[in-house]
Image (cartoon, rainbow, N blue to C red):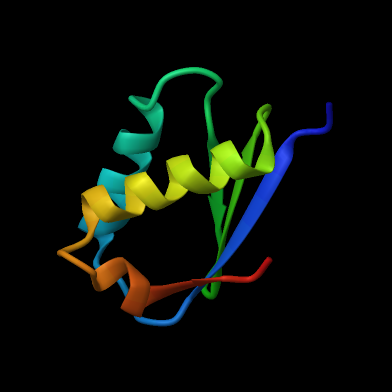
Length: 79
């Protein structure tokens, strides 16, 4: 199975603490691990799992690090 890839556009600037918390939540998120790379406008998540599971785990991580509902106003999926 090819690794699942999920790309999200950053539509609102985030403070460094959000990125640090997101990295921590993903690292503590279990197996298989999710890798994250970030540019100024995009975050790319990769994991050896199915697309649906990767998207669900990423959404859960973003809900954890952002204020209630804020992740939907700050990020939008590209794919």
